[in-house]
Amino acid sequence: MSHASPKLHNAMWPGLVGKGDEAGQEPPISLEKMLDLTAAAEVNGQKFEGIDYFLFLPHTDPNATDDELRAIADLIASKGFKVGSLVAPVWPGTVGDSAMGDADAQKKFLDAVSVACRIAGIFKEHGIREYGCIRIDSAEFGVEKWREDPKANTSKIAETFKAAAKIAADHGERLAAEGEICWAGMHSWKDMLDLLEEVGMPGTVGFQADLAHTYLYLMGYNAPEHALLQEGYSEEEFYAAYETMTDKLRPWTIDFHVAQNDGQVHGAGSHDKTGKHCPADDPNGKLDIVRCAGYWLKDAPQRGIKHICWDGCMFPNAMLEDPGTWNTILDTMLKVRDTHGWD
Image (cartoon, rainbow, N blue to C red; front, side):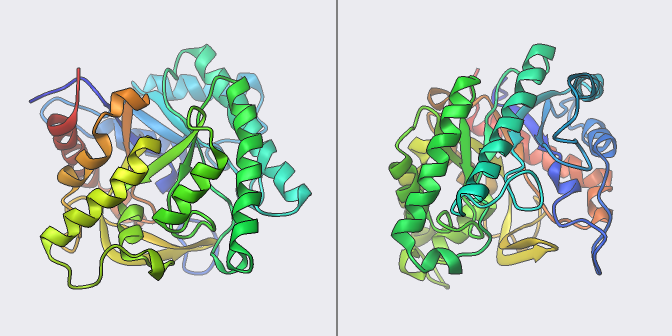
């Protein structure tokens, strides 16, 4: 059955994440090129309806003037898109720094959230942005430093997130904390839940679920004590574990990424190893994307979800620049909406 919602978005950051000028890296793909690739995709007359967007160079100067940001909004609108969720530049080397760092690092993190809220406001005034969250994470790569004092470090991240939430709330925004095994204090389903509960601001700080990343939550990749599955699991065991995980995290979930994972980890450049994104039709994919999406999208409208986004970070440029890649992705997104959408 065809539905009008959720709106179908494509992420722009796969043109940036893992790209660069270091040895073995491929160059970034420009915002306009990513927009054009997205706009060209079409399946049975249906196209992508919007984009989600990383607020940093080379796609966006976080210190851009209002007029420069309006020009970017004009460009996006000219391709027929709305803007949904925005990724705040919270990481060291961008505007921000570790949420569990010292006072200076925490200030940089909050500055990054302020930057994202400012840009979000300009996009709202322009009319290009009507829904979506601002995505954050702990901006602390890896878990070793966190493990030196888990309780204290989780509390420090929670303290930073609470301060960030006040900034967001003042701008009418919600923050979605991305569950991914490379982020300290967010590297397992249980640690993620503990952090959300310690922040305790469900109206402003929620969870952003990505199918690829949360698969490795099941396997306990960076937290074996929290594994819900062991290698060699049966289909019945998989869905029992999946329901356990999603029942815990779904009530917090306010942003959702459709993705595929082959059970491996991957990293490139400064981006630490995390759940490997795979093509939607990857024969080694571990997930029935459509079925798994349903666990996260149950009651989605009640949690304010109005769009879903594809995420396929660290694909080779040749794959990203192949029109067939995007048609396959769009077809998968349509199947998710046809099965679990609403009107």
